[in-house]
Image (cartoon, rainbow, N blue to C red; front, side, top):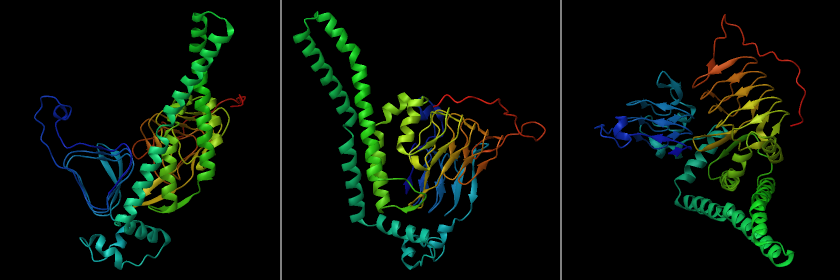
Length: 379
């Protein structure tokens, strides 16, 4: 089973009982079968069954007692239930012998496409104890190696501040209170300087270790998968600084340094990962907690595709623009909405929902986002 980030699974039907209250909620088991994919931001309610090979796409709400058939693909939340995109995905062809044949049949399958070959290789390695051990070893080493970096920055800031304090006390002849005040005032600037140095180091590591993120498909347990995992661990060390700078021109400068293509006067509060595949146009806005990552994980294959936010477009808080998705100029995606892979929100239109659909502008026309010519501020 493959799980994405921020997946919520609930097994108690009564809300009060689930939150530790006095309600006598009934527990209903959740079953997730072998080979299933439960991707980012999914919510699974009590009594749900996700059968073999089924895919719950990003932001899926699996309603209570729902059953997801073998190799089906579902996503979103419309009137409290997910949307079935595909009853039996193409991956079902990998399992000969009909229902119940399971992974044992994969050895008899002859892949016809490069993507199917990747799936076969990834699943075979996934079942190998040696590959499992290698992957987890690399993952743990990467995390252990980079996890202390923020603490190191903090300790170095304190140490540098103490050196300044000690020398000022010994050599300047200034009063003790004045020196203490000076040291306290300097600390935030020392912390910021060393944090920027850390981000510069992370940026240099990205260019040396990954280079440019490129559109394509990459199997689990392949070279790119190992690099991808290591790079995510390294990027997490800079999360605190990015959170502080997000929404400012300074964050834009940093994202550009990592490879993103961002226009002037843009405001970015969301979080990208595969920077080189992200394009954000002039005067566009990306709200808080928006997901602009340019990858999906499908049947143990990482797929990278460009994500484009056109000039003047707006993505409001908590929304997701999937890889291959595009917001054309002056379009808008409302809060907590999701544009699916490969979809385009046409210029001037407003979309909302999971998955997103056009919002009627009244009379069936487009919304009027006409504006005067702005002068760029040089962001």
